[in-house]
Amino acid sequence: MVYWYLFRIQGALDKKIRLPGRIPGTKVRIERGVDEMIKDNLESIQKKALQQIREAKQLDALNEVRVNILGKKGELTAVLKGMKDVAEADRPKVGAFVNETRDAIEKSLEDAKRRLEEAALNERLKAETIDVTLPSKKMGLGHRHPNTIALEELERIFIGMGYGVAEGPEVEKVYYNFEALNIPDGYPAKDEQDTFYINGDILLRTQTSGTQVHEMEKGRLPIKMISPGRVFRSDEVDATHSPSFHQVEGLVIDKGISFSDLKGTLEVFARELFGEDTKVKFRPHHFPFTEPSAEMDVSCFKCKGKGCRFCKGEGWIEILGCGMVHPHVLEMSGIDPKEYTGFAFGIGLERIALLKYEIDDMRLLYENDIRFLSQF
Ligand SMILES: [Zn+2]
Image 1 (cartoon, rainbow, N blue to C red):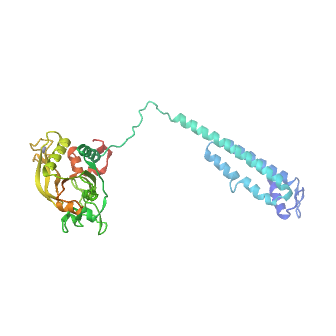
Image 2: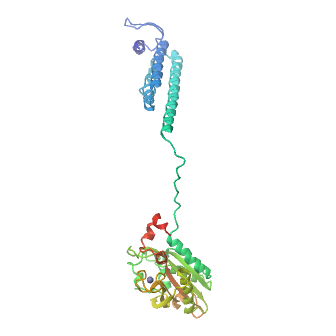
Image 3: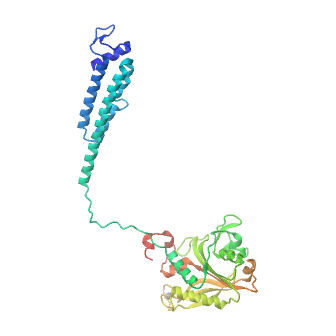
């Protein structure tokens, strides 16, 4: 090393010196050639590095060696920086020494790294034992929602009676949601407090009846359809209310359709859904889009009409609203009410699901807790 530093002084004094001689102005004599001195230095760096690499027991220690020798401030890097002091004619030779040294150290580092990684893996394999006889984890596949199951049941029943299924837009023109259904201005449902308006002409539909208007406007008669879908009302969230829920509406239009067709159809539907011995009863009601209008109750399928907690002691459970399509509604959609008549009904899908599966809180239907859903 002494020679090396002496040479550095010398190099600073005279870049061209490359042969042994005396440093000008001093008594210090350089005994050997520059290339030999650098070679010695490189050999000592390499020896030290290989020794340290052999002794490294951890990858961290190995990395430390790499930084100390090959890093930005490493010893070998310092030699490379000193190349500027080496006479030009010696540079290729010295460069080759440096490269050889670096290659040897890098190879040794690589080998040691592989050796240490292998040892670490073996250590881990020894420590971790896998019990291949353990039962495997069960993958949850999810579960169909009670709404979906109820809807498929409803669709099955009506398709069986020759109905088609039509779907309409959830974002609807105010006209299709209200005017075309004979709902006058000032009707409570039209109020901004009950309806989500997007602007003066567009809203989130409050009922699926708009789909029926779209079907009537197509002018393809007779019509026999149900329209299931999501509807929106600006409601509180509680056990029986939600701002978003689902309806299944039905519409039949043909020549000579009467209220008895309505009653017969819905009676068949109720028996299919709740059991053969289900009784139905119609109570007069009012809807702007039907005349006459009614609400249909079914006999409580739990107590068979005797009265229980489920039907609040009434023996009857309210199921749906229905009626004969109002002549104005037919007229507005271009159907001649003198020639055609029809009936319509609307069922709350959640209500059916709650009843059928004896769920007492509607909010459970929207939480999508798999522990809840997988019970149905
Ligand atoms: Zn009951």
